[in-house]
Image: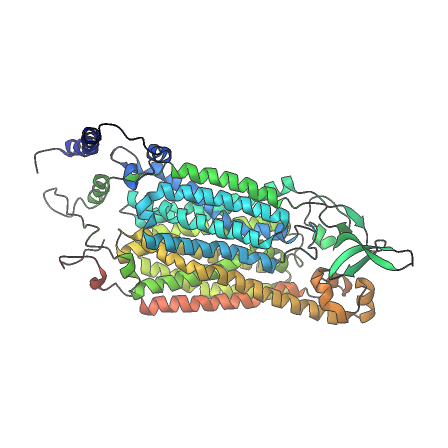
Length: 633
């Protein structure tokens, strides 16, 4: 307007804050006559550019937007380690016994909800921070630094919880603090790239959370390496022919004869490990009884190392985040649409003011709740597989295909779960830019209905054929399910931007993530509840097939005290199978059938609601004081 070039205008914008700051400084001096010392923390906040999101605006047009990608991926790579949670199931459930679960050890049913707790507090924190405008007020640097501190603190508390064997403390550390860290750091790291890639929001959101999907892929071998480094074998007590044991108050103790010749329990707790349990250890160990608390699974030290490492990675990413200036954003949009108007003129870009829905207004639209419901059901179902992945693989295929489905194979499967998560995020986030977000979600949620049913079908097929084909079917189906979950997570931020406008993506994204509060608990709760129910029924069924005298000789108590033996973890499916004739089908391979059917029903609901009820948002919900027509890109 005033005959200035864009470069001259940019220079003026850069100089203006300094001019105002200088003028204000001299005015302050004249009025007060002296400089007031600033707070020490405030000085450092300004040096690290934490005082305001405006401090990190990048005005240099030569700055490459791709330089922000590694920092966003690094943050999500650390947060995404939660997808390797099933690696912790075994060491957490054998903290005391190490080679096998002791009476005082946590059960898998106790542990799986820890994963759900993490994701629930993720959703709760994201909803609170998004609703309050915390993301916009403080920016990605402050948010992700808080996430780094919370994540490191959570892993440290989890390490202490393992050492003192406190389940509530484990929930507090890994669940509460870990979830809060994800809630405060996840959304800002996505929002940064959405600003740098205004023309490819689907690609940007997929790129941003690529690290989140790959987190488990990196964490799985890292955790296994750390567990192996810090673990130690417990002390061997004796084989089942020579060792004398007794159950007292539901706990298995080493026993000895007193002066009267009676068998009494000592203070030494023991646990029995058979060939099946010991097959998971690299060292050759003898079946028999081992002294409780004389070894270590290494899980406490592993948690501590992960907390330090991930905290540093997130903090590094946080301190390097930048926002693009409005000039940079407009030039990106106008470059893509440079041929829309004749005479080489740039078209007037829509502004955030007249094309966005306020977060509070978004809650009044049915479109918000359709996305909320679909994301929740899809996530909840996938979490049932992620939380129990390694355990499920060993329990379903380990007994029939022991030479293929080993511990290392199960670890590989967990890594592939993360790889599938990553693949779905990358593939569909870009594909959705081409085929449209609505069709993308029809495909993602609808395809999961048969995929979940293929999992129990493959297990029953395994019993009939005893071949590797059912294993391939199982892996393919479950990994495709995880790909659909990853694609949903990566694509729905762009879906939000399409439906509600770009200005409040972070806030509305956080509000949608509130669905993880129930979803995080629901998936692990369903799988743990149905699993424990099926295991109990399987043990009772197997015990009924064993002659009473054989049962009493093996376990030292009659079948009428089966429940006490189960509580003491003396009677297990593996030990019962050793007493039954060869060819008896291991019932533990069927314990996930009901879970998979329930998860298939979840997706019938999600895909059906989305297909029949998703419509464009009514214009009345958009911000526009002038009442002019809304422009959607």
